[in-house]
Length: 214
Image 1 (cartoon, rainbow, N blue to C red):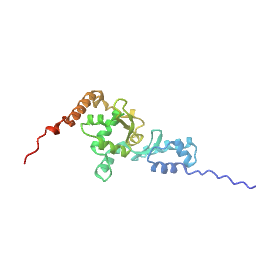
Image 2: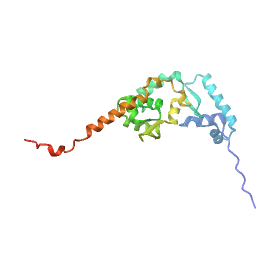
Image 3: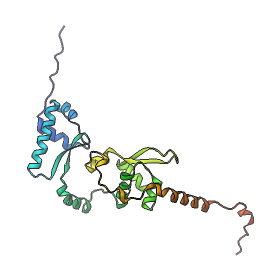
Image 4: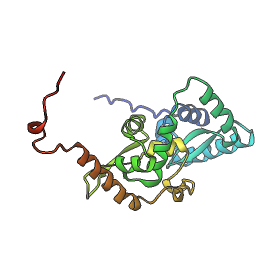
């Protein structure tokens, strides 16, 4: 009986293949996944990635190859942030509104957090903004409050990727600028009580109301 010949493993050029794959990736890719895709040992892939990253820096490129959240991805360099911002703000690129950015900051520093508490901090209703952030994949539901049952929200891995952070611990120390949430509980309860009282109609109101005269 004839045997089917085994297929030889395919091996692609190391450095060009890494550049091509990482360039089209929408999230950091682990070295082991890259190694499997191009047919090279993981150790060789990791070494090549670091060599490429060093070369881009030495050549003064406007982008860099960075290891973030356990994987590798291309990012623009910080020193060219003003040029990138000018293009994004002046062009036709989709961007978050100021309200969305402020809400995202509150979620990032105070997560997990409910919509009512975000609204209390910002002083406005944030239902629509939170839906936008959910659609963009920047925040996600993270369970519910044990006391109130309100849905809690937090940032996603995609948020870390877009910010170029490895973890939330790398966020700038801005949290002290936001009020303590515990101090808002009493105010939230007071507002909720006022709203409930304002919507409650007195009993028998319809019976005592006089008919309108022309």
